[in-house]
Length: 166
Image: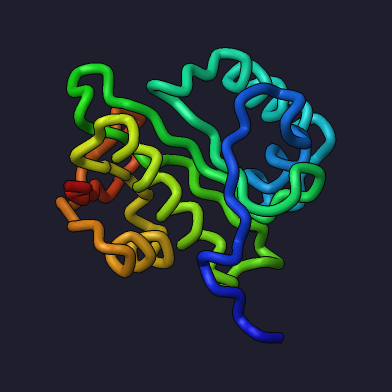
């Protein structure tokens, strides 16, 4: 199968829970960790996502979805840093395991960059688990600078990244 180019992957902003199949997004989040999601896990995760979408403020927070609203191929979240309005965060990048290597993650990352820039962002920050080499390589491949390993408040080892937007 031919690889899809990043600019051909449709990425759009979900602004309310009815814009997208929230259960499908919840399933993707769980499947991304290599597990088959249970109905209870999907229900709980979907409830949290629905609540997030109800509180979306486009000037400071967005959920970006790749693919069809009823069968999303991936999604991510971005939000403005509360302490520094020129800093935005790129978080929770999830791509359907069956759709990887089709530049969906790249398309989502580029949309986050343009979204943050359009809303006054000058720096984009991100973090990933230190034991996730695929994510670390992805961040570096799209231009993030590795700021090194840190310990998160929950005790997890993470790698912090930043990227200038302007």
